[in-house]
Length: 208
Image 1 (spheres, rainbow, N blue to C red):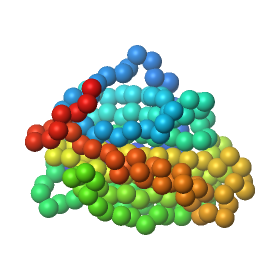
Image 2: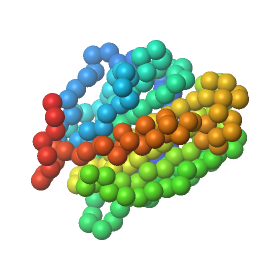
Image 3: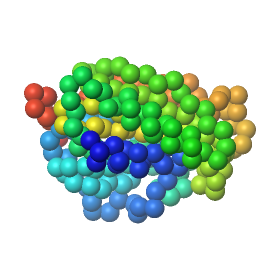
Image 4: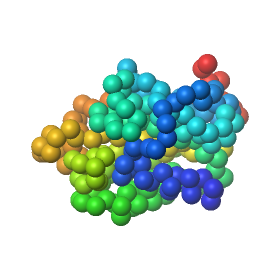
Protein backbone atom coordinates (compact mmCIF):
# COMPACT_ATOMS: atom_id res chain seq x y z
CA UNK A 1 0.00 0.00 0.00
CA UNK A 2 2.73 2.48 0.91
CA UNK A 3 4.49 1.85 -2.38
CA UNK A 4 1.35 2.42 -4.42
CA UNK A 5 0.21 5.44 -2.44
CA UNK A 6 3.62 7.04 -2.86
CA UNK A 7 3.48 6.40 -6.60
CA UNK A 8 0.08 8.00 -6.99
CA UNK A 9 0.87 10.98 -4.79
CA UNK A 10 4.03 11.55 -6.78
CA UNK A 11 1.83 11.76 -9.85
CA UNK A 12 -0.25 14.53 -8.23
CA UNK A 13 1.96 16.87 -10.20
CA UNK A 14 0.13 15.63 -13.30
CA UNK A 15 -2.94 17.51 -12.10
CA UNK A 16 -0.91 20.69 -12.02
CA UNK A 17 0.99 20.07 -15.21
CA UNK A 18 0.56 16.92 -17.28
CA UNK A 19 3.65 17.64 -19.36
CA UNK A 20 6.63 15.34 -18.94
CA UNK A 21 10.36 15.42 -19.57
CA UNK A 22 10.18 11.93 -21.03
CA UNK A 23 10.98 11.50 -24.70
CA UNK A 24 8.41 10.41 -27.25
CA UNK A 25 7.79 6.71 -27.27
CA UNK A 26 10.57 4.84 -29.04
CA UNK A 27 10.69 1.06 -28.94
CA UNK A 28 9.31 0.68 -25.44
CA UNK A 29 5.92 -0.77 -26.24
CA UNK A 30 4.94 -3.87 -24.29
CA UNK A 31 1.79 -5.88 -23.64
CA UNK A 32 0.91 -5.75 -19.91
CA UNK A 33 0.19 -9.13 -18.35
CA UNK A 34 -1.89 -10.01 -15.33
CA UNK A 35 -4.62 -7.77 -14.00
CA UNK A 36 -5.10 -4.81 -16.32
CA UNK A 37 -7.48 -1.92 -17.03
CA UNK A 38 -8.96 -1.69 -20.52
CA UNK A 39 -9.86 1.96 -21.19
CA UNK A 40 -9.97 3.49 -24.67
CA UNK A 41 -8.38 6.85 -25.51
CA UNK A 42 -10.47 9.38 -27.47
CA UNK A 43 -10.85 8.57 -31.15
CA UNK A 44 -7.85 9.64 -33.21
CA UNK A 45 -5.43 9.96 -30.30
CA UNK A 46 -2.02 8.28 -30.52
CA UNK A 47 0.17 6.37 -28.09
CA UNK A 48 2.81 8.92 -27.04
CA UNK A 49 4.75 7.33 -24.18
CA UNK A 50 5.02 4.05 -22.28
CA UNK A 51 7.28 2.96 -19.46
CA UNK A 52 7.35 0.38 -16.68
CA UNK A 53 7.10 -3.38 -16.45
CA UNK A 54 4.78 -5.77 -18.32
CA UNK A 55 4.16 -7.62 -15.05
CA UNK A 56 4.31 -4.68 -12.61
CA UNK A 57 3.79 -0.94 -12.39
CA UNK A 58 3.56 1.03 -15.63
CA UNK A 59 2.44 4.34 -17.13
CA UNK A 60 1.12 4.90 -20.64
CA UNK A 61 0.20 8.23 -22.22
CA UNK A 62 -1.96 9.25 -25.19
CA UNK A 63 -2.59 12.57 -26.95
CA UNK A 64 -4.03 13.93 -30.21
CA UNK A 65 -2.08 13.27 -33.40
CA UNK A 66 -1.03 16.89 -33.88
CA UNK A 67 0.13 17.48 -30.29
CA UNK A 68 3.73 17.36 -29.05
CA UNK A 69 4.54 15.54 -25.83
CA UNK A 70 6.32 18.53 -24.32
CA UNK A 71 3.90 21.27 -25.34
CA UNK A 72 0.40 19.87 -25.81
CA UNK A 73 -2.73 22.02 -25.79
CA UNK A 74 -5.83 20.11 -26.90
CA UNK A 75 -5.68 17.11 -24.60
CA UNK A 76 -3.73 14.48 -22.68
CA UNK A 77 -4.51 11.06 -21.21
CA UNK A 78 -2.48 8.79 -18.95
CA UNK A 79 -3.09 5.37 -17.39
CA UNK A 80 -1.03 4.03 -14.48
CA UNK A 81 -1.00 0.61 -12.85
CA UNK A 82 0.44 0.07 -9.40
CA UNK A 83 0.45 -2.88 -7.03
CA UNK A 84 -1.57 -2.37 -3.83
CA UNK A 85 -2.68 -4.29 -0.77
CA UNK A 86 -6.44 -4.15 -1.27
CA UNK A 87 -8.35 -5.43 1.74
CA UNK A 88 -12.04 -6.20 1.48
CA UNK A 89 -14.22 -3.35 2.70
CA UNK A 90 -11.49 -0.69 2.49
CA UNK A 91 -11.57 1.55 -0.56
CA UNK A 92 -8.20 3.16 -1.12
CA UNK A 93 -9.36 4.88 -4.31
CA UNK A 94 -11.38 7.42 -2.33
CA UNK A 95 -8.42 8.35 -0.13
CA UNK A 96 -5.99 8.56 -3.03
CA UNK A 97 -8.20 10.84 -5.12
CA UNK A 98 -8.65 13.13 -2.13
CA UNK A 99 -4.91 13.33 -1.50
CA UNK A 100 -4.08 13.90 -5.17
CA UNK A 101 -6.56 16.80 -5.29
CA UNK A 102 -5.19 18.26 -2.08
CA UNK A 103 -1.71 18.18 -3.56
CA UNK A 104 -2.91 19.78 -6.80
CA UNK A 105 -4.59 22.58 -4.88
CA UNK A 106 -1.46 23.24 -2.81
CA UNK A 107 0.70 23.37 -5.94
CA UNK A 108 -1.61 25.67 -7.92
CA UNK A 109 -0.10 29.16 -8.17
CA UNK A 110 -3.51 30.68 -8.87
CA UNK A 111 -7.09 29.65 -8.11
CA UNK A 112 -7.99 25.95 -8.07
CA UNK A 113 -11.58 24.98 -8.86
CA UNK A 114 -12.31 21.42 -7.67
CA UNK A 115 -14.90 19.01 -9.03
CA UNK A 116 -17.23 17.13 -6.75
CA UNK A 117 -15.83 13.69 -5.94
CA UNK A 118 -17.99 10.72 -6.89
CA UNK A 119 -17.53 7.11 -5.76
CA UNK A 120 -19.34 4.37 -7.66
CA UNK A 121 -19.02 0.95 -9.26
CA UNK A 122 -17.70 0.79 -12.83
CA UNK A 123 -18.37 -2.57 -14.46
CA UNK A 124 -17.83 -4.26 -11.10
CA UNK A 125 -14.80 -2.18 -10.02
CA UNK A 126 -15.00 0.31 -7.17
CA UNK A 127 -14.08 3.72 -8.62
CA UNK A 128 -13.48 7.23 -7.34
CA UNK A 129 -13.63 10.17 -9.78
CA UNK A 130 -12.89 13.86 -9.38
CA UNK A 131 -10.70 16.60 -10.85
CA UNK A 132 -10.35 20.33 -11.11
CA UNK A 133 -8.88 23.34 -12.87
CA UNK A 134 -5.91 25.53 -11.91
CA UNK A 135 -5.96 28.92 -13.62
CA UNK A 136 -2.24 29.68 -13.34
CA UNK A 137 0.58 27.21 -13.93
CA UNK A 138 3.41 28.93 -15.75
CA UNK A 139 4.89 28.81 -19.23
CA UNK A 140 3.70 25.31 -20.12
CA UNK A 141 0.06 26.23 -19.44
CA UNK A 142 -0.16 30.05 -19.35
CA UNK A 143 -3.97 30.02 -19.32
CA UNK A 144 -4.34 27.19 -16.84
CA UNK A 145 -4.84 23.44 -16.92
CA UNK A 146 -7.65 21.09 -15.94
CA UNK A 147 -7.73 17.40 -15.13
CA UNK A 148 -10.26 14.64 -14.66
CA UNK A 149 -8.91 11.72 -12.62
CA UNK A 150 -10.27 8.31 -11.73
CA UNK A 151 -8.86 5.54 -9.55
CA UNK A 152 -10.16 2.01 -10.22
CA UNK A 153 -9.68 -0.80 -7.71
CA UNK A 154 -8.76 -4.25 -8.95
CA UNK A 155 -7.98 -7.27 -6.80
CA UNK A 156 -4.19 -6.72 -6.72
CA UNK A 157 -3.71 -3.32 -8.37
CA UNK A 158 -4.95 0.23 -8.44
CA UNK A 159 -5.33 2.01 -11.78
CA UNK A 160 -5.17 5.80 -12.10
CA UNK A 161 -6.56 7.38 -15.27
CA UNK A 162 -6.15 11.07 -16.02
CA UNK A 163 -7.48 13.33 -18.76
CA UNK A 164 -5.99 16.81 -19.07
CA UNK A 165 -6.89 19.98 -21.01
CA UNK A 166 -5.49 23.50 -21.43
CA UNK A 167 -7.34 26.59 -22.72
CA UNK A 168 -5.74 27.97 -25.89
CA UNK A 169 -6.40 31.61 -24.96
CA UNK A 170 -7.05 33.62 -21.84
CA UNK A 171 -10.73 34.04 -22.69
CA UNK A 172 -11.53 30.57 -24.04
CA UNK A 173 -14.53 29.17 -22.10
CA UNK A 174 -13.94 31.75 -19.38
CA UNK A 175 -17.58 31.51 -18.33
CA UNK A 176 -17.05 27.87 -17.33
CA UNK A 177 -15.04 27.49 -14.08
CA UNK A 178 -13.50 24.22 -15.35
CA UNK A 179 -12.70 25.73 -18.79
CA UNK A 180 -13.96 22.69 -20.71
CA UNK A 181 -17.15 22.22 -22.70
CA UNK A 182 -19.81 19.96 -21.14
CA UNK A 183 -19.64 17.78 -24.26
CA UNK A 184 -15.88 17.21 -23.96
CA UNK A 185 -16.11 16.51 -20.24
CA UNK A 186 -18.92 14.03 -20.88
CA UNK A 187 -16.81 12.32 -23.57
CA UNK A 188 -14.08 11.70 -21.00
CA UNK A 189 -16.60 10.50 -18.40
CA UNK A 190 -18.14 8.11 -20.94
CA UNK A 191 -14.71 6.59 -21.64
CA UNK A 192 -14.17 6.09 -17.90
CA UNK A 193 -17.62 4.54 -17.51
CA UNK A 194 -16.77 1.97 -20.20
CA UNK A 195 -13.47 0.96 -18.58
CA UNK A 196 -13.12 -2.69 -17.54
CA UNK A 197 -10.65 -4.55 -15.34
CA UNK A 198 -9.59 -7.92 -16.73
CA UNK A 199 -6.82 -10.51 -16.65
CA UNK A 200 -6.80 -11.16 -12.92
CA UNK A 201 -8.12 -14.03 -10.82
CA UNK A 202 -11.82 -14.67 -11.54
CA UNK A 203 -11.81 -11.89 -14.13
CA UNK A 204 -12.46 -11.88 -17.87
CA UNK A 205 -9.53 -12.46 -20.22
CA UNK A 206 -8.11 -9.19 -21.52
CA UNK A 207 -8.39 -8.57 -25.30
CA UNK A 208 -5.16 -8.73 -27.29
